[in-house]
Image (tube, rainbow, N blue to C red; front, side, top):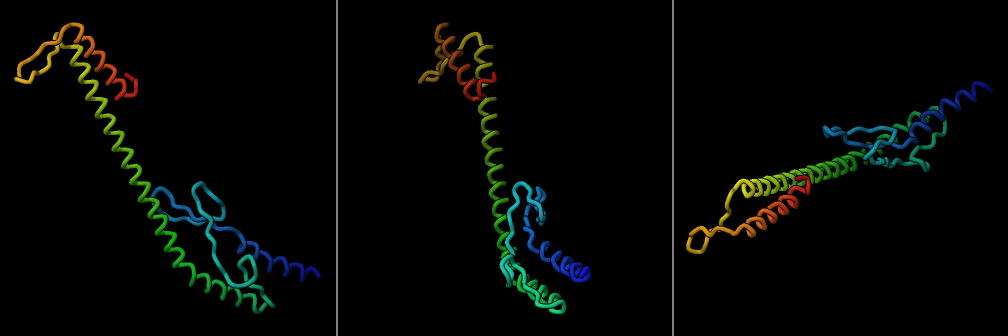
Length: 168
C-alpha cells in the first residue's frame, strides 16, 4: 500500500510542476527571462500542449508515462518557436517604442532648458542695461522711456518664469 502511494505521489509531482504558470520578462539589458513567479512587467506565457485540460497528456501506465510527455514536449517545441519569435518581435517593438518615447522626452526637456536659458539671459541683460532700445524701421535706435523699460523688464521676468516653470 505504501509503495502504491509513493508511486502515485511521484507520478503527480511532474504533473503539478508542468501545470505551473510560466512568466516571460525582459530585463533592462534586453535579456529574456522565464520564471514561474510573476515580476512587474512580466507576461504570462501560454504553452499549448495536446492532451487533457491543463496542457498535460494523460499517462495510461508507468511505461507509457515517459513516452507521453516526450510527445507533448515535441508538439510544444514545434508550436513554441513561432510563438516565441512573435513574442520576441513584440518585445523588440515595445523596447523600440520606449526608446523613442525616452528620446522625445529628452528632446522636449532639452528644448525647455534652452528656452529657459534664453529667457533668463534676456531678463538678466534687461536688468543690467541702463537703457533699453528698440531698433526702428530705418535701423536707428529708439530708446524706451523709464515706464516702458520697467514694463519691458516685467514682461521679460514673466516670460522667464513661464519658460522656467516659475523656479526663477
